[in-house]
Length: 168
Image (cartoon, rainbow, N blue to C red; front, side, top):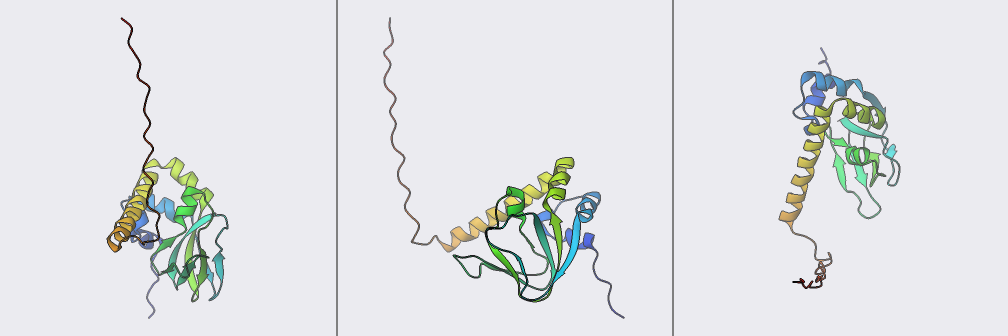
């Protein structure tokens, strides 16, 4: 007998970006998720495209690459991607290509922003989780050391205020 696939709610509970939500809040996120499948070799988006949605990978592998660095990261099941561009409303900074057939959840940006506007606690939790994830990434990068090719910061110019004489 085949095992029952996990529910969308149980998948969302395991994702760090949605950590700390209440059951009803997970239901709100679930309601804006759209399942989708794509074949091997399919390009979900290209570097420079708009960011109309974020994704949760359920099955398969996605390669993220850029013009400057190929590959950047291989997305594995249980990971989210595209959330920074969606939240910042910026163009994609990488190209996402299916390395195998994939099953994922798409979260539409307009629906996501409406939800965050209606549910400030969800908004706070997600932004906190993304910030913690990014700060953890920065700490790991700092431990590895910065590349020698970064320019040294220029000292800030000294600005002196003119002395004002007090009149007696």
